[in-house]
Image (tube, rainbow, N blue to C red; front, side, top):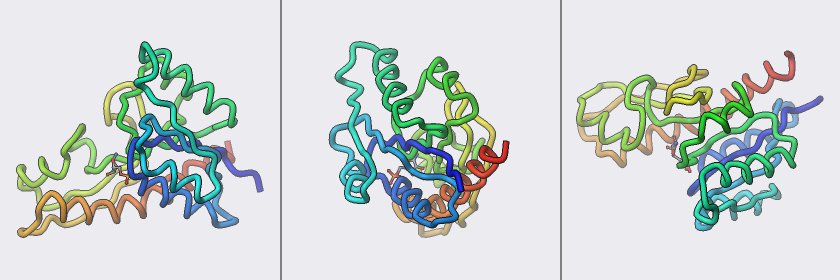
Length: 194
Ligand code: GRF
């Protein structure tokens, strides 16, 4: 069975990355994780991916004179691995429209809110401040606007009266780890069938 080639971009701890790597170990999973790239040298996920036997590297955005140069290096690395789908997993750089256009409809992201609510940062704090009773996470296709592309999958979690941003984040994160592998599997299977 051919499997779609996935590159994961991270900036930090990489728990969603780990969920994708774990799911892709199943022999019938329609995607394989061929590389992990972090834009920060201190991203804990790099060591975790390497320990899983996945090719993992740092491309430090601070080492480049411009965003275009950083993204050119990123694209060169992804293309060297024959990446067909890019999965953003806590990747904290906003990609340019030019970069996104190189991989049209092939970049996925996980966002910790029920999009289109709470785009951007600090979603759990903002959900609590707004008093919403349901919160959650979304896997979506990346387009040139922040946290804006078509939603592929969502999961809801309840907001409890005693929640803090931390307890709510932990509940949402569990849901993230469930839906990102499921959404990537559906997306990759569709790509392979197309
Ligand atoms: C997750 O909450 C994800 O939704 C957001 O950034 C966080 C990354 O966490 N985009 P991790 O690095 O996957 O643990």
